[in-house]
Length: 419
Figure 1 (cartoon, helix red, strand yellow):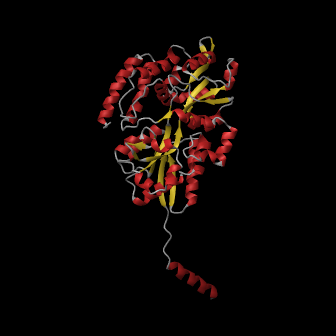
Figure 2 (cartoon, helix red, strand yellow):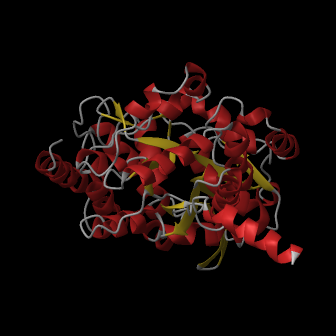
Figure 3 (tube, helix red, strand yellow):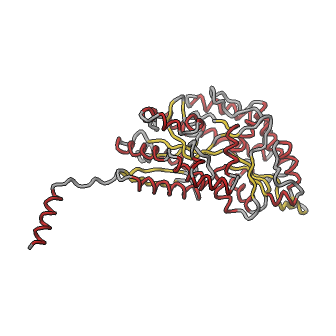
């Protein structure tokens, strides 16, 4: 009888209590594969465990191009996520169209200490027309990876990789190993779009000026950069044509030992370390007229169409990732750059840098890093550029003619998109 009375009393007490509200589910689309996905999942698990008001659900939606395309289809259908990862030159399209929630009202409510913990470039790069629409998550620059064993075999100093364009050309020739008409090892690989942007800047050119969105792709300096890169393939024959027009092949050539030098994002360092079986070297990009490295990677923005509860939860996640100990997870797992000033002081980051000096190369290269223009037309411009490069590489169109035509097309794209 006493047991029944106690149960009845407990039921009565519980009946008078409001039911516990289910956590608000926040959706997040991201573009980080392999080690990047591992980092995202770790961070999401930590966020969900840190509070009970929200539950974040992350989904890998393909590379940056894939995610942009999916968002363009999902947004008008009202099926876009609450949080979206956008590559640094692509988010202007979504900010300009009103898809992204403006973050300045959120940031203004935060303390000065919150803003001061960011690296200066990390807050300046995510601005569109002077306003903040995104926060950085993974930041990168291209770096030079090289096979130290191949350098030794070619009689080159494995601790003295090329520092200039001239040295790159000379060393690539020595590193190219031929057997009759076949090439056993190519000197250099990885002339992808990220690196093409870097070389244009190193020649003193630009794609689009970040100051006023004027097109500089057809300037003499930009044409000179494309000529130099194309000559590595056509004239010097130290880089394979196939990988030039299909940049996804670059890492395959390099990890398999079929290429001695590879240019790629620092964000791939974590995965690359585990993929190669040779002595891996990491160095800054070789310099042309000047040293320069574009800032890449991605940002995260909030869907302005999400309701208040979901926008509030989305901001809670953006605040959560703005912690050095959380940023350190992305840095150590992938090689993407520290965004917070104290990230490198976190124990796991200090340990990684001490054990593998390659982690610090991209950090030092930030001294010559630059923010790229991000007008609404930039996704379309980036989608068009590979076909222009391919025409140059295959000898279908001389570089000056190809870039003059492309420059005119870029101006049309910019004018139609409002700049």
